[in-house]
Image (cartoon, rainbow, N blue to C red; front, side):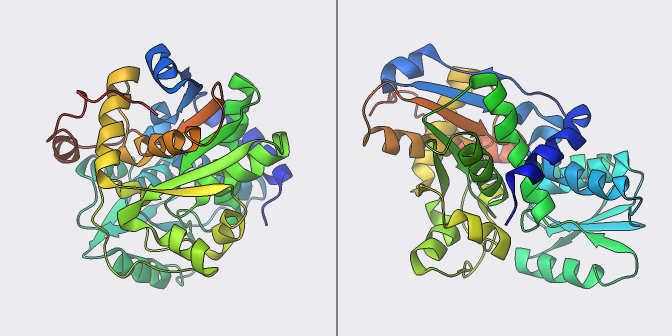
Length: 327
């Protein structure tokens, strides 16, 4: 289990290498929902997502011990790829990323821009097998996207930074793919205030985490999921993240229609370029607010902003702005 001290150590390691991303809110949304909703705009982070925190923590920790590898490999649907490519470039270590052929064009281009090689496969399972094989080579470090204590600790720094900016909150919401961000958020949030509720959201069409929690064991998706939230399209959570996810207060499953709805509305209200993976978390917020008294103080972690034209076109095929947000 990752300890809170691991997260505070990680924060100290990476503080000079990342942005302190701002907090946004919408007075209209607050009025409509009867509570104060604060958004941590991590979509404005270096490489456009929170993932850089975990990648930097992993390499910075090794650099402290003079144990940097000669080669780095990683598997990712996009944001982790960019994060590892950026961190590897910072520490002057060659990196190869294993992903799928349907990876976002924006994320693929940025990964190559940072200097990493990109190996593409038909499915995520094939990419995961390939990276495992590559990791057996001498002096090669595999940086997984979520299932590693140093990754979880790095992602947990997002909650620490947010708490400095907004103080105590009644609840914090984060998206769940492999569970690295949600796990780190849980550990940080509960250490700062045990009364803070920690909730997650994942696509209904890629609900392996919810199924795993229901069955009490890790369940993998049966095939590539059909979801706009590509950042949460991981085949399964890992043993490190699952251990923490079993303790969160609730995990909500979000339909594709609601993913589109909240991506449109948050882009409209906040004027931020964000991924559907983090926008979908607002549906979990709404469902939770329906069950609690008014005037809650809620933190939403906007985890990434890397979205290409093709996905944006899909999201805006139907205009959802004619239907106001409401409880």
